[in-house]
Image 1 (cartoon, protein in one colour):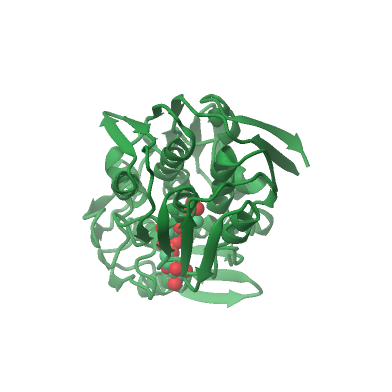
Image 2 (cartoon, rainbow, N blue to C red):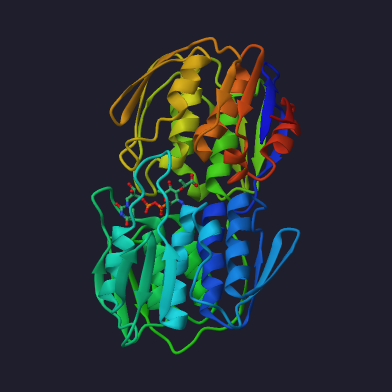
Length: 421
Ligand code: EPZ
């Protein structure tokens, strides 16, 4: 196990580059199963989640090659049985179901475990596949899917009690590309990662209209062909670095290779708190406000404030003037970062799906425990500002979704070192 030792108090400056999106890469890598031809995918971040996905594809029988940021996959002959030992490590492997069922007419995928951000059901995924004609058995922790009479297009409402499902939309869209007839998805997720997947599938020859809206139409086709594609920038990594600048950059800091239209809710929030964010093409120049203040945020489906950014913004509120509230309507339990931030001196309390922050507080370094991916990144942000040394244990949580976060932050002046725990 590794840990990160951060010495707080240095001011960040300069330019930090954003990698390709983890959450766009995962369903797109799964989509390579929809064809027996070669797919070349650029800017796949080198993080453990994408590496797990490549291991699964390889174990299924696909030819997989990674050359720096590019990935080449050719799924000529693949099995329908996903390897439990890898799948159980990553919930996103659930998005193998759609492509396997579409390509092979069957899939055995182990049920994703729960995780620290709360219950992670897949009922919407399974119901959608059933409406396309799949017969599903859940036994011994495995989802066993068979499609005796082939997938048939249908009109499906994907909306759940917590709103649209991102990977559920991805799974259904992928399955529908090879179904017989027209599939209409109502209540679809509109996240940029869903749009990037639709672009990828379209290049493969799929017929998809409406990606990026709540209603997506997919006309099934006979087969799909190989494709070349470049993954969109990671909007959550970018947002994390924008907040890092607002927390710890005394002068201007630039976050490069972003897609500004994917970050409006985060950028608007930073401006509402008194920070300057100037967009110049793919760059965002951030200058910390003289009197930073807190505000209220409430997460929601894109383009509302992203649940994957609420913990990071909480760290900024701690060192800002006034009372702030953070409400997560998507994952009401996603507050693992709160007790760790309290250990560092944050005045923050949790009330159900809301955290209430009173600022500004002086943060002091302490040994803390990483938990989910974004809560762990939040501890790094707090540590940048804290007086003294913070030791962040269980670093593997951060490595799941942030490509070389320590090297990137050291590149703009942060003082930290990765060590064996
Ligand atoms: C994706 O997860 C992201 N992961 C998550 O990012 C992100 O937090 C989430 O979307 C919401 O934006 C990837 O893209 C790999 P959902 P996903 O299905 O698709 C409920 C990160 O930090 N739900 O959109 O699994 C669910 O419990 C990760 O990078 C059902 O009830 O999330 C949640 O409350 C964390 N039934 C809500 O819907 C279902 O069948 C949204 O979940 C599916 C979901």
